[in-house]
Image 1: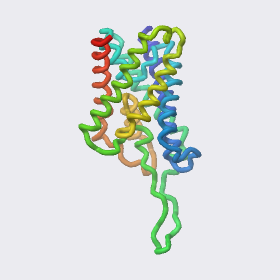
Image 2: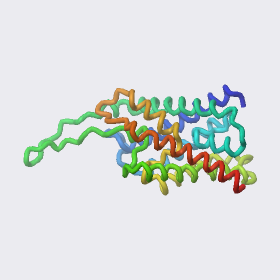
Image 3: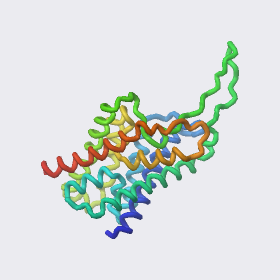
Image 4: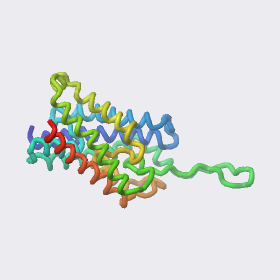
Length: 253
């Protein structure tokens, strides 16, 4: 694969991943969305389908990594580092593009993110619904802000992603059948359902950092903070997890 193919494949594939992922979060979160409040299971499957669509699309061009942690895990295992920077740049660009596209899909809902005129309650208080915080549509937010615990969660969850991804390559027939991407997408759903509760399971530095950058600059009414004080955890944790998964795979297999 040429550097151009890798870059284009990762941009397109990661953009599709984030379009689906941020899209399902917007659908569940924003007022005036038909899917509002449909829950965590919907979000987990939406991200899984995003992996499915993005990785299958990118696979012929780049192999469909879509995740710096996966790229690092593969490089640690194989010792091939020459193309790593191309993957990482493509993934970041694709993540930002996908976040922008998700914003455009829900543009009317984002523009309506204002406090509506509410009816006064019995005692005269304003019962109007507050504007929806929007960062969680684009990036992860911990339920309990504990840097050590949050970092450990992201490291373990990323190992749970990257180690099986590497091991799937040893399973005879998966690559030839083309079913590997489907299995990885189901793996991502499983991680979301099982390990996503504490931090929202970034497990992908580009998936969190790229959309967080876009959120910072988008003209969303009442969008709230982009929480840059937390942003290092969903970046560092998955990178550490990817490297550890590569080392473990190399040692055990």
